[in-house]
Structure formats: C-alpha cells, structure tokens
Length: 322
Image (cartoon, rainbow, N blue to C red; front, side, top):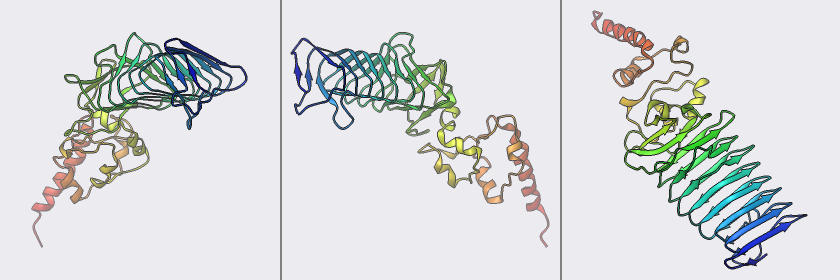
C-alpha cells in the first residue's frame, strides 16, 4: 500500500479487513491521516510506515502498529487489541484507547499527554528515549489495568508542566525509570489510585550514585529518595514467605548499590506487630554486622531484642574463665 497526498489528507477505509503495509519506504505521506479498519492496521512484524503530522482519527477492531518518520500528534486512536506507535520525533497524545497493551516510543523528542491514554485490559509502556514526559490539564492522562512502565532515561516526568495523572488499577505496579532532573526534581505525579508502595524505580541506586537523581513526588508527597521508595519494591513481596540472611541476600533487592549504615530493617507484616520475629535467632557473627549498622526507624520495638543480646554478650565476656 502507498498513499501520498503531499500536504493534504489521506482517508482510508477497510470495511471487511485490515490495512497492511507495502514495499514502499513510506506507506502513507500526508499532513493528516484518517483511517477505519475492520481488522488490524499493520502488524508487529510489518508496521504501517508514515510520514505525517497528525492522526486525526483512527479506529480498528484489531491491533494498530505504526512507525512515524518524524514527530506526530495523535488526536483520536482506538484499537481492538494492542496499539504500538514509534515516532522519531516528539509525540503529542490526546485520546488513545486500546483493549490490550499500549506501547509508545519516541527515539528523539518528548512525549506530551493532553488527553487520556487508556488500556482497558492491560498495561502500558511509554518511553521517551532521549526526552521527557509532559502533561497538560487535570487528567487522568494515563489509565491502565496492569503493570505500567514509564521510561525517561535522559529526562524527567512532568517537572515543567502539570503533574502526570496516572491510574494503574487492580493493585498493579507503576514502574519508573527517570534519569534526569530539573533543579532538585525528577518527577511530579498524581493519582487517585496509585499509592507509594505500588511505585517501583528500575533501575534504582542509593545513595551514591542517586538514581533517579532528583526528588519524585506523588500527590505532593516525596516518595524518592525515601525508605518507602526503595524498600517497597517488587522483591520485597517475597519477604512475606522468605527469610533472608544478612548480609549476602541483600543482593536480591532492587537497589544496585547501598551503604549498610543506611539500610532499613524491613518488617514483612506491619510496623506495629513484632510477631514475625518471635522465632528470630541472631548469632554472634550476625550481631557484629547488625550492631551499629542497621537503622531501626519505625521498628523501635526490636531494640529490647538487640539490647538483650548485647547484655548477654557482655556478661559472657566478663564471666571468669575456667
């Protein structure tokens, strides 16, 4: 397929099937594109290649796969399966709805939300490879039903715009990769659904190098850097069933570097119940590591436990030798 209207508009309608790409370098060249298909538009192996400014309206009962030569504005796009969009310039996103996964990638330029991007049954992967993510208006800007990934390895999230309003439903995770900062800030997000314990930072590093390099805020509260930001990680979920030794198994946490003086003791149940430690035994070697190294903020109830060990150790050292 090859459609070229120069600086005009291309309108495509497939009443009984999908729209497939051809052998031309660019399948569609136009200023604006409107399409409707009773099947898939492009495929993962052969996306529709475009050289356009705007998708005014696009609908498909199947998946939609588009690769754009430059930047693009998406005003309205609805897919009955996955939506995959790659642009080699800035992307301006208004109203996008997919039944399944949404994947949007810009190799250069920013990604700007001004409407609502919705995945009804799945998640989203939004990547600005060398830019930032911005949002305008109150939102919601991104609504998903499964784990959702926002990646700006060289940029920030909504630092110089309205906060990004994200709803990741069904108790799933919002995963952030933020490599830049403006001043002291790397990201501003708001959500009526997402809580701090459902935000993961991948990759993450603390305290030196600090990654993300700046503060990240959710609903006006700083969630990075803080204990909850790097302890409420996906790995910590397994602490409900596993006991980790000290210090070798700390490598299984998502923090790539850490200073043991800043490690927080994690309680797998609640901050007020000490029941999980009833059968906890600490040998002398382990105590030498723990004493003066672990920060027990939020778990002061453990202090008598360690004080008893220290008293016993002192008493044993003072006992007369046979």
